[in-house]
Length: 466
Image (cartoon, rainbow, N blue to C red; front, side, top):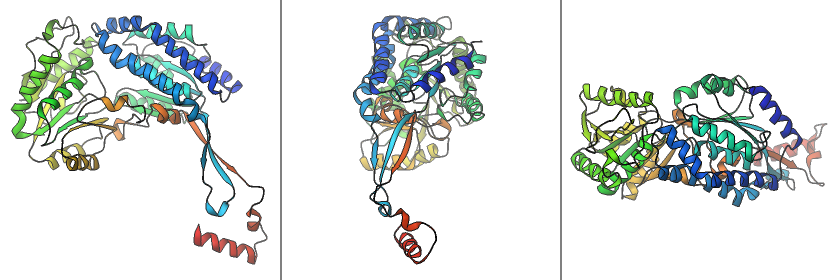
């Protein structure tokens, strides 16, 4: 067990000597992170590939290295502006006083990283925390040991140990990490573990950002372009073999279009992953345990009456943890596959008769992390947006709302709390300190005791116009 308390105290002492680092210091740390990513791209991709058994380099570069570098560069372009005090208007009765918001680092931030995107879900919040002027400790996943060890080694080369530290270890270390009195703790992972993290943080009154998951729906409206919708849903479902927290978890579609969607989905998989059984660009399931869980979800659904619709000719291969994609028709809510987040290449289909029925289905369940809508009628799009809750939405595509620096990423309700990315992340890891600047000539003295006629006149004016 590493001495986590000593590591945190070391960082606190360093932060107390430089409570609010200037932009030059923050930019130097961000550029160090950029050099780390650029210089070691190949090694990072190789480590993740080895941890998964097969993770295509192209997916690692597209889904982890590119967004990580993009986040660093966005912060370097805009971070100095984010740091500036924000002028606000004083209330009319207090003029000519001035008010401001001063962004101030929280201190030492803890980040707990999941296994499915072990680089991006470490670097993304790390960028925001560094831009905000904090020191950072990261707990990497024990399920990606090669990448976790490599990232720990690289961080020691590019950062002082009072700036950024990487902690590795098993679940026991993770539990101890979440119990540290950080100034802010960000956790990405399952809802079940999120409960434990929040309880541990509450003992220290540590504020938390929870990025969880849930069953993210894809809704095909009556005006959806079928081929395009099928391709984009299958793209979002099958990158990283579905091991993505915002992957479409099930599809709601018009009952009369079920057969058309199944055919379009098969055609899309053939285009995206030709000869899937031997295609190195289709990722493996990361662990034997997860492969077994997904296989059980599929088999349980079949035994309970679901129809299995294969999307390729490939057969499951437990030795390689290759799980070909399938659609599940005739599913029911009491099936396990409809009660748990799937997190793999199984995609249930739920027919509806009216769009309002689909909206009601989503609304009756826990708020998802993402929602995808395929529709060409703007009034129907607005109806769905107004009547559903989700952490984020992409219309006529999947996944891409997470890649927008000007949009916060986060959940709502059971799918999480808080958000980050870009300026939203800067604010998450900052205290926006309010400052009231009194003018030299002001009327505050009119409210001083003893309370007489003048006071009552002023108070009456304030009650009337305040």
